[in-house]
Length: 427
Ligand code: AAL
Image (cartoon, rainbow, N blue to C red):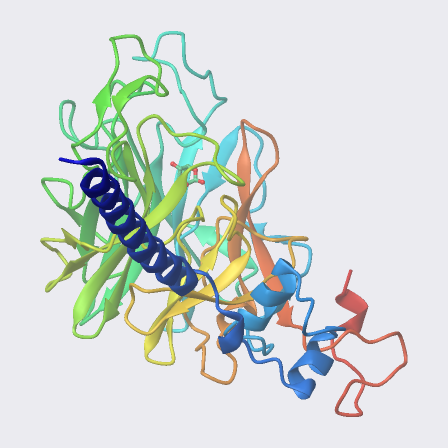
């Protein structure tokens, strides 16, 4: 090749490379532009800017851009909780006894009913004789039942509602964190189960019992109705739940806090997952929720392919409203203390928040109160939750809350010219 040809050839190669790079970078740019919240789709009308108090649409901070992208800015879902109040009768605090994780409250034949975990004695923790010790306050629990005429004074049944299984069965060690579903003349209790021994790597499962009376007797499923995912791998033999080769799905260690809702002709079992090798990540423990769906209350429950269906949360607190399912996300993760709603029981979006103060976290919803489109959080008017009297002992108390629509000084008027109800309770 003579010199001229060489130069031409080199120029051609450079041209092709540059053209390709340009093509790639244009493509990349489009992709990045598409991924970036585009300012052109933000509503920066004078009305919107005024409502949000944004000074200059040419200088939108990232936070202002995010605010302009919020889908739900109305106030339908904002709640404030008052301080919880003690119950009377058999559910008043009792030294030496754990009563915790109340189910939803239902009303049958004029009486309120609740189920809960109960155990006796202090917690020993791990590291001792795990065959005989009590490793958590919710270890060595069984499910108990109480009734009340007014929701304040409760009478506990003389006998346990759901006892432990025989030695060697999946629920021979602890049965706890129960929820109730009433369906077609039957009552269904779903709950967490532990098979002995209870060590930090023990898998936690979900069991089910049913009866045609809230007073039982209860018939139990022979097998768990839900189990942790099996795709995590522990590292080594040492009892340490943080040592993993592979973490596996969000629910590879424990399936917890089960709650079944009849929905769209099927049964949606919501639950909390705990993952092997759990980390503290972005604002809390790595806790996420999942759902498993069945055609019949007794199962089989098939986990949704969309799991996990939350990125935050802890105890499950779900209720049907406006043809969808709502969820209160508590305790863990960046979206904690938010109300979320999904049109299909699976795809949840944030609709509002709760004020953190006095927030009950292990809520037993009062299913006698209907939530409506106009007041989607009405179900939180009152209900039950537990409190930690100490690490060893918990008791069930009553919460109440109200919807907050404006921030009004004492004696001043609300936007609709009235005095705000409950003002004295705000703190
Ligand atoms: C609760 C629940 C489950 C856990 C324990 C008892 O907050 O998430 O029930 O197992 O703590």
